[in-house]
Image 1 (tube, rainbow, N blue to C red):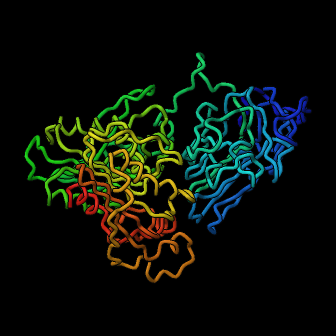
Image 2: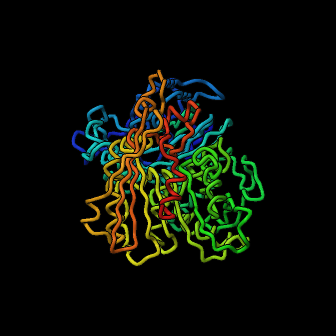
Image 3: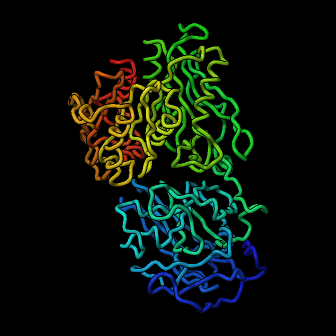
Length: 562
């Protein structure tokens, strides 16, 4: 067993009596002294915390209520450790947590002052991905004993840290200053170590998790007081398949994998990658348009090419003579350890301060020019799904003159999107939004955000209220009954059977701008196209994709004014 950082033997259990009232009614004031950093090494054999520095609590488990299976028991590996398994959940997954105050109960979450410490350390092994998250009274809903009165999931803005599990034991150090909120905008912008309510470990998808030697640390900051950088490759984990030059798609003269170097803020140079499809008939240094497509969180360029667009963008490029780029986010905390070179875009909601993904998009254009593919003055269009859709919006806000058109699908842009700048007179003239009101890939109630985005962007384009309140509405043909014949009980699949699509067009005859909105009722969180996904885990998690529309055609036709 690994010993606590600040002691050479197990300290005697004791409870430090509070000496002053708490700031939360009914809660005893508890403050760590720093003498005993160990939280739990599970040597007591049960789910109860040892009583060090006033800490007292019991581990508890919970899940997303989608019918999966979870177990959590103290078992002996090389020492006593908590062994957790999670299987077959189709929502966000399952979790375990522990409160640190004996005053906490189902009606009241009490804070523990851990400000004498700088972070957490623990040993972990297994397979899958886990989120360490810290709750505080201020960002926990009233129904769970907290103080947050906001609606739905906006209260769960718990600062956290994702990590991937390895079959061998590894020790993870997480400074408090690296705990970032999920940006669902509850009532706290950052972690306050004086208000530690509970420590949570949430398992994503099927996972096995061993946890041991959970303790506080006092080594989370550099000597000058600044936080250590959370570098992309560190966040990806030791077993991540980070291989920029490798790909599973069949490469051709037209379809290639390409790499270049991009500096980070404090973590050195990062090798970035992208796939490009260049029709053989295009001349060198062509003035052809460029369409950049961005995958969602924990995916990669290949997944957009194969699983989302299914090669259709390549076919359109051959037909109409344009260049397709499949962007690839940098590795990091959202890397899937089983998916080669996967990651998430560093839009404002996932920004780690190290990787500038808007700059990455500019570097792609530079690299295409260096490769003598384009002349550098080409019209550039941008589309993406989910986290990639949010990245589309981020890029367009920062540099609207770089993009002639954008098409975010099912975009995650946070519960409080940043303001859209004035777009009138910029190069951005065509905007297509697409979303599903009951999207299983989004938090409950997120349609309230999505449904307001088109008007906000339309106003930024300079459209009048008269135009924005009188769209041309067309119900698109319902060609396919998605999920026809499904007789299971998965709630996500059942909610996405037989989706329908409606198109809304906003065109201002006095301005050369066009806004289009596609609303997919009951659609799954997948790029629409005529071919349904056949993988059970995808359908259980994201639902049936809409098959009435091919989003690749819809995006390109809109950009071309068709």
